[in-house]
Length: 478
Ligand code: ADP
Image (cartoon, rainbow, N blue to C red):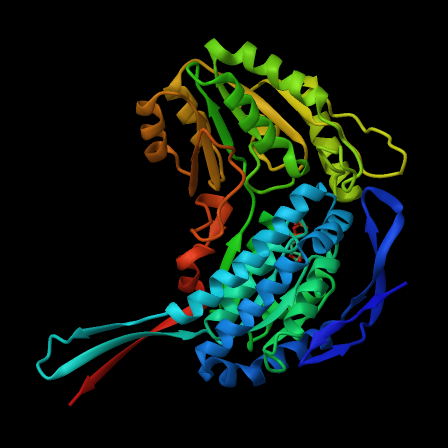
């Protein structure tokens, strides 16, 4: 069985231990043995990144642009193969996985261009004879901590801007998806970047992640994951004044109004709530539906869900892959029980299903007769589980949509220009979708939310530089 090491200071380094990477579609299958590092290896990686920071930061932007373009080109060329790896280790369908890999490739290429586009300002001073120059500089060492649900796209959208703007990187992928993390490291290692500029350390969040967050040599931390971990990281990072950027959960509403095109509404709901097995922070977990269309909408969604095929992520006819692991499956099942105890009615799904291979298969669950105060409508489930909240009109829909601790994405399905226009303003989410699913975003524009969903500057697109650079103001005379 192939073993996969860590990448520290330009060398492949043995882990302290190795763990099998289990396929959630087939628990009898291991995709490979992956290194787990210890605290001292995290410290070595941080030191290597620290030593490389000055050279990379001061180095030429052409070298950075070329490296990122090379990385993006290889990812795109290997889209099918890497997509297969992703589908096997994470459990989203092959089509979704190949799409995600493509996105990662384009992200690297985009930030290759951004390395060349970074500019500053030259402005007159209020003092005669003085000029003011505003420039952007790298932060130094950036710690990147990522979750399992987008195991190649999320690392890409953090690593690419970090490198583009002259930072060095210590990257810790999620324990459940080391395969994509390793593949990125392998591609970056062959892209011609100097030793120490990029480092991969795999292992537990409480060991490797913690070491990164607490190290005085790490200048910025970009994290995507759960609310609790994000909060812990925020407290630790701010204690030592490190720059921090967090992307956490969502409880994203999709509002469906009486005047909606029913097919559009059903497709947006099913795609947004259940594709990628509902394991997306932008998933539409609350379907906020007005009275006049409610029953037709529920019937059509149930019919569509019953026709979806839950199965092996890499099988051609699979619509929904397995849940990622036992812990997540237990969480999903527990919320299904909580919902029923709270008085919600399960219109369909929510059952463990068996397939030819043993895997974490769960049929997509739709709750109806729910109230926005129920736990299933307040806490992130992170699985193929969604609730319908019935409302009387548009105004109540907006109130319910915004009545949440989160604010990542929100959608509306309507044929009314007035309501669509109003919702874009009234929504308190960072991203608003009109007649589109709440999940599914472009790679060249900002991504992020409000309230409990995000903290710090936006990720992606031109806005990524807000986190990955620091601003200097120079006053010059003569
Ligand atoms: P998820 O539910 O996506 O697994 P987590 O927040 O547990 O969410 O994990 C997201 C990432 O954060 C993973 O890479 C994980 O290893 C890491 N992590 C977990 N705990 C900590 C911690 N205390 N400090 C730093 N990173 C952590």
